[in-house]
Image (cartoon, rainbow, N blue to C red; front, side):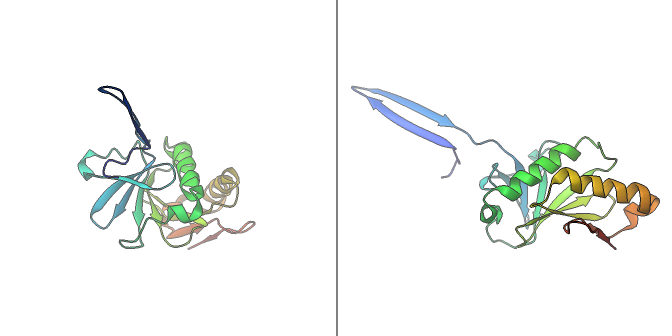
Length: 167
């Protein structure tokens, strides 16, 4: 429990040989709860606490928990929200769409992912809808309607099938 191995087996062979096999989990994200930081696995489970100075934000998405010191909440969605978030981060991390991800926000709504654009709005995604379609809507709204006002908006909500709301 203390080290968070994904798989650990210990076998003893008579008379004095031990076979130890272990597998470490892969880090998928960094969760910030208050002033503590944790590495998360691909299902959103906490692996271990980490020093904030040791985190490279280019490698893993940063997730802020708005739920206090409660459990991260990813497990309630069966890892689906964590998978969606990871996919969104990997698609957008190279500045492919002309904006940079600052962080993701975690709240009690297990069907959505909230992304904070660096120097720009929050963008709300529905994990039950196709990610590519939602990104296409975001880019279309940004390029056709908002143009230079994109970074001035407080939020852009893509969670509703045919509609986009922004403020």
